[in-house]
Image (cartoon, rainbow, N blue to C red; front, side, top):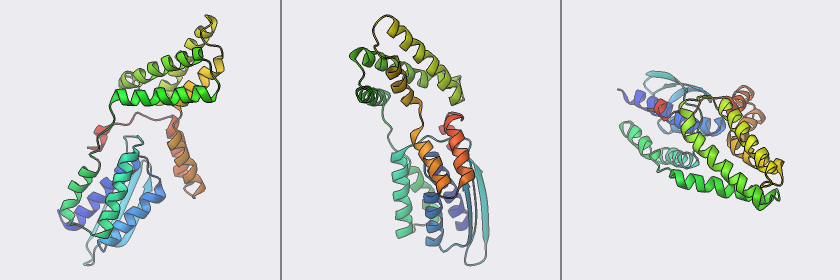
Length: 244
């Protein structure tokens, strides 16, 4: 593979990783053009949506390379990966390595250690407990909220194997959580039905994806913003296998 094609393949994989990790288009475009400039690429044409990227570049000798990737894996916001990818971009722009080393550097950048399932559950429980306090919920409300949180967390681990669309999963979770909250209020455990339902529904809101979608719209990327907004609620589960 020629050096130009190695650079092209790296940028396409880098772009996909950035988008899947939750990067906005403006940041991605800036990174791609800076990397191309660092390697002396000419006549650079880069187009990106959150589900598709296309790149065409030319070297000083006039050799041309172009490629595109469709991103089927969905978005799974990973701030640690984003930070490491941004650092990789700055490192490459400051001192461009040999093109053959780029793929290894990318693999190393995204080889982050994730949090364990118990740690994630503890984070959700802490967040839900804090929100219950914000809404002035009682101890009974807190108990129901924490029980529903554990239930939804476990459902997210196991039901995604058979339910691929998040809107279906969210509807089922909302129905079950609402039923439990109504039952808890009927037996006198929960004092405020709406506090329980509102707090637990926060767990299903894709906050970062929604913020990115509105940011895209305000920055002039209306089509991508609307697509990202719809995909925030109606999308398939992310699949790490699609990135291999």
